[in-house]
Image 1 (cartoon, rainbow, N blue to C red):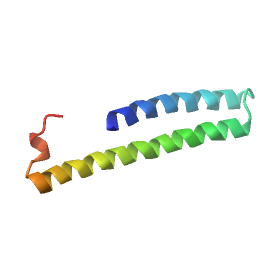
Image 2: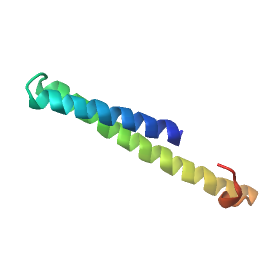
Image 3: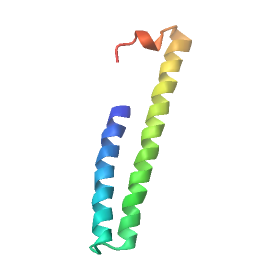
Image 4: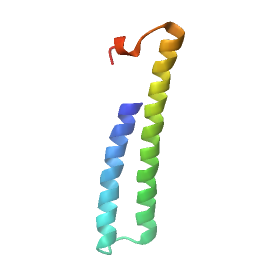
Length: 74
């Protein structure tokens, strides 16, 4: 879900910041740092996918059932 993806992004952002700080002071290597960056980037992609999936589902409701998304209690 979109909310879960947002929470996951916040967690990965913190993990990435921590990894970057560790890399900058020499406590981790470039490979581990790049893996952290990759996980963070993938989480951002997942958030965008969740957002557009949510929008698509709202449009399906609107098209097939005549439900205006503004009338839904979200």
